[in-house]
Each structure stands twice: as structure tokens, then as C-alpha cells.
Length: 446
Image 1 (tube, rainbow, N blue to C red):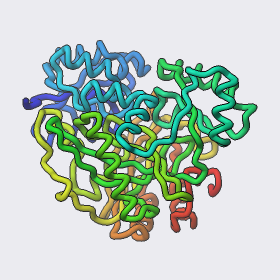
Image 2: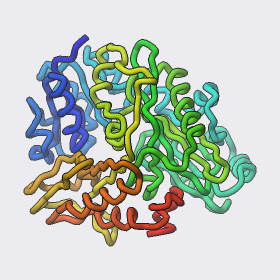
Image 3: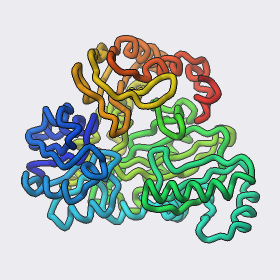
């Protein structure tokens, strides 16, 4: 099966990213867009474009009938969902199958199993992957919830089963906040994800966030492409990602990567995906968190270290082809850091939409920029505030940090605010330079 034309059911930089790989594979592209995104770069460079609805995402990028209709009228043979929006939506993947559209992602069974954070933990335990034992709130009375949390020991973390992207989580340090927080978070999760199911697990107080990139095909072949350290976060949302992680020994790195492969094999995974872990620096132990059954925002970090185009591989395995690489073929080069550039007010951290009067992207050896903005483009207030990713490669971590700072200095975004200065503060911080920090870095250092 060969895809002659792919519809990209997304927007922004990931839509542009997918378009480029499609063009290199000789595949024609269709992009969809809301009325607010008619001037976006992905609309300008696609072979065809279709407006699928108003600015509000629920009426456009999350509108399954509109997207399927766009695929039908353009005679597209497959859909690439990017990340976010419908990328992990099993119903959408099922509808694509019914409409004889290829879905560039894992099989529907994987989407269902790994999309449920509670069920995915059960599967991880069955696969022998270290996992923090969760407390399932739905099954317990208020008294039993309090007793169970007390046994775990505070602090604990409440998580929404259907949450993602840093949403649907709350840290609890005192028992008096437990039950009220469960009620509030359940309501918020139901409104945001359509599912208010929660669970509680022990909160690791000095963690690193480590994730492993995997690739798998429909013939049972699974490999990993190393790890990424995504510890620099704000409100559980990643800001900076890098590879390799300097806190892992070679033995622990091999152990955590093999655990990710074992889990992928357990669920018959067959696409690009990421297995996320919490690494306890004090105990030198790691624990399964969740599996992201899609391409990640930070996938360029792995691409720059391995030289492998993950989007191309994702498309090829979706066509039924075997992986072009075996584990022994994967090699790693240098150190890579990615900075997520957001349109946001540095004083309030609130989004900063508006007209970009001047934009200059950085360049030079080892610098890659994934974006969708340009001088004269208006950043819309309806979507995520990320407008660009600066991905930098150096011989080692020290050179990479210096080169990233140079690239940030070269970047000019006028007319709106951005978080570039925040990135500079982080990279210049001594705790970051010495890699002595946890997911609490921002609150402790900036």
C-alpha cells in the first residue's frame, strides 16, 4: 500500500514538519485549516488546502466529520494527525478505517489500551516494567481514599486517567486538601477530556522526566532510538528537552530503553511512539508514567542525534513496510537541546497573540528551527501558544548550551512577547549547567 496523497489533520509547526517529509517522499499533501489559520505557513506550502470550520478547535481541528469530508473531496489516501487534537483519538482512527483512509499512527487497539492511563499501568506491570502502584479513586469510599493515600505517604499526585500535555494533575502535600482536590480535578477532567476518572500515586520528590523514543512496524519489529530528558517543566508542561540525559549511567540507560521496547512489544505497537518514565535520582530507579501513541513535540531532538527522519519512518510503517533499521544500526552523535518558543508575556506567562512585525530565525552550524511564523503573520489567540522550536546540536553538552544561547540571541520576534529570555535564564543557571535539578527546577531556581 502506497499513500499517494496525505491529509494533515493539524496546524502550526507540526503541520509544516509533516508536509516537508511528505514532499521528500514524493507524496502530495492536503492541509486543513480553520478560518483563523488561512494565512498560516502550512496553508501556503501544501499542494491543496481545505477550510474545515471556524476558529474554535472543537468546530474545526477536532471536527471529525469535517476532516473526513475534506479527505473525501480531495481523494486523500491517508491522514496524519500530528500531535494533540485527534492524534490519540481511537474513534477518529476507527472512522478513518471505515472510510478506507490510512491512519498514520498505531493500531486502534493500542490507542485504546495506552490512551487509558490506568489500564496502561496494568499492562506495564504485566510486561515487567517498573510502575508506581496507583490507587483507583473510583473504586473507593472517601475513607478508603484517605487511608490509601496515607499508606502511600505524602506528598501524592492526583492524575486524570484521560489527561495529557501536563493537564489533569495536582500535587497534594496535606491530607486536608485531598478530597476537595479530587472533586475539583474530576470535574475539570470531565470538562476537558470527557472523562473524570482519577487515580493517585506516590509523588517522587526529586525526579527527572525521561522518555524513550520507539519505532515499530506491523511485522513485529520494535527498536528504540535512545532517550530524551524532559525535566525542565512549568506546571507539568515541558519547556526544554535534551538528549542524552546526563544523569543516567550506561547500564540504567540500556535498562530503561529496553523496558520501553518490552512494553511496545507487549501491546503489539506499530508506529512511532514514546514511553515516558519518572526517574528517582535519590534511589536510581525509574517508573513507567504513560505511553504517547503519536509523534512528540520534541521528536527533532532524537532526529538530530540519530539522523533519522521519524515522520518518514512513521509514514512508511503505516504503509505496511518493514523498519529500515535494526537496533544495531542506530548510532548517536553529539548532544542536542530543544527550546520551545512560546508567544507569551514574560511578566504574567499569559499568551501574547498578535501581529509579528519582524521575525528573524537563527542559523549557523548545528541550528535547526521548526516553525510556522513569518514577518507579517498574526499569532492567533485560539490555540496553543508555541510558535517555534529551536533545536541545537553540539559536540558535547557544554558546547550545545553555548550554541543554544547564541541561537537565542540571534532570534528576533517583534510585535509580540515571547519566552526567549526565560530560556536564556534557564540555560545560564548554574543548576542547569551542572545538571543538578529536578522537575521542580523553575520554582527553585527562576
